[in-house]
Image 1 (spheres, helix red, strand yellow):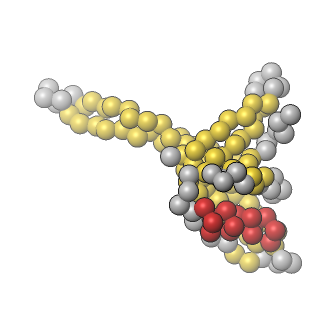
Image 2: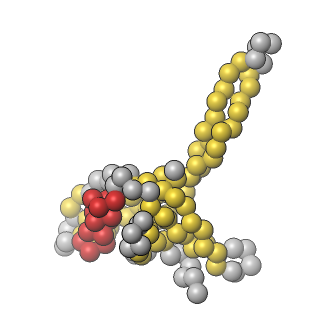
Image 3: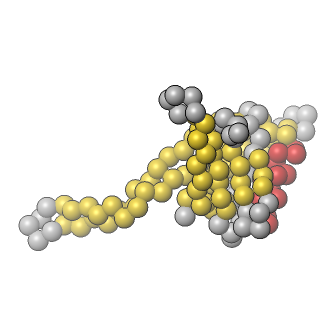
Length: 127
């Protein structure tokens, strides 16, 4: 049974990381990869090559355990294509699982109060 709002990273070796939902804001954006040039008539032409997604997980505050999970994923799999599994609820209330092949980008962190970390934004970019 899918778990609404679950986001999971799966490595090529089969390791599964369920990412912490606490304090998380999630956003996704799409990018069109295009080629543009002018025709002989001067008219602008655009070829859409592909549409790729960027997934951002923004944590205002995150605990050390969750941060270490991201550090582990990045340090062990930074050059590996990962599977990002996202569970979304559709308009009729059914949970749907979607999988994307992604690379993880490096991320920054800042030490906060009481063992928490602040301003952590983790991005995954579709390959």
